[in-house]
Length: 130
Length: 164
Image (cartoon, rainbow over all chains, first blue to last red; front, top):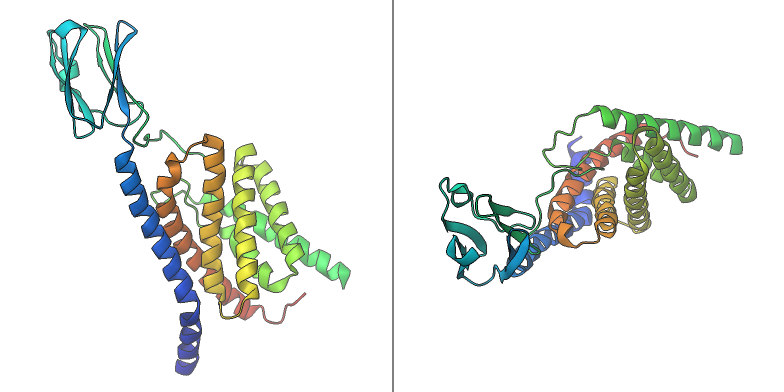
C-alpha cells in the first residue's frame, strides 16, 4: 500500500508537476502583464453640456477643468475624474464618487452637465452568459 | 465487435449527456461567473483512455451539440465546441507523450477548455479587454481539471476489464 502510494506519487511528480507549475506560471504572468498593461491604458472623459460635447480630456494627466463657464469644476487626478465644485443647490454630482472605468459617468442635472468615461479601464460586466 | 463499439458509444454519449444535465443542477458556487466543474469532461477523459481518438472527438461533439440544444443556446454551443475541441486536442497530444498521468492530462484539458472559450469570447466581443479574465480562468481550469483527473483516475482503475 505504502509502496504503491509512493510509486504513484513519484509517477505524478515527473511531468504532471512540471505541467501544473507551467500553468501556474503562465497564470501569474498573465495576471501581472494585465496589471501593468491595464495601468497604462487609461481612457478619457467626455464632457457634455446640454447634449453638446464641450471637451475631451485624458485621464492620464492630472488637470482641473472648468465646465460650462464655471458652473462645474472637474478634477482629474490619478486616472480618476471627480466633480469637486458645482453651482447648484443639491451638489449631487459633487457627492458622486470619482469615475475611471469605461461607461461610468457623473451627471449634474441642474446644469445639464454629463461627464462620461470612454475607453481605457476594463468595464465592469453586468452579466456573463455561458 | 463493431456492434459492441456502437453500443458503448451510445452508453458514453448518454453518460456525458446526463453529466451535462447534472452540471446544470449544481448552482454555480465557485463565486466566479462561468466557472463550472465540467463533469461531462470526466466521461471525455475516460473515453480518451478507452476509445479510439476519432470516436472520442465524435463523442465530444455529439455531447456538446445535444446538451447545447437541450440546456443551452447557440452561443453556449459555440463556446463549448471551442473549449471542448481544444481541450481534447491538448489532452490527446499529452497522452501520446510518455510520462503524463491522467491527473496531469485532465488538468491541461481543464485549462485549455477555458482558454478555448476565452478565445471565442474575445472574437465575439471583439476586444482584448476580457484577457484580464485569463488568470482566473487558468487557475479555475487547473483546479477543476485536477479534480476531474483524480476522479477519472479512480474510475479507470475500476474499469480495467472494459476495453474497446
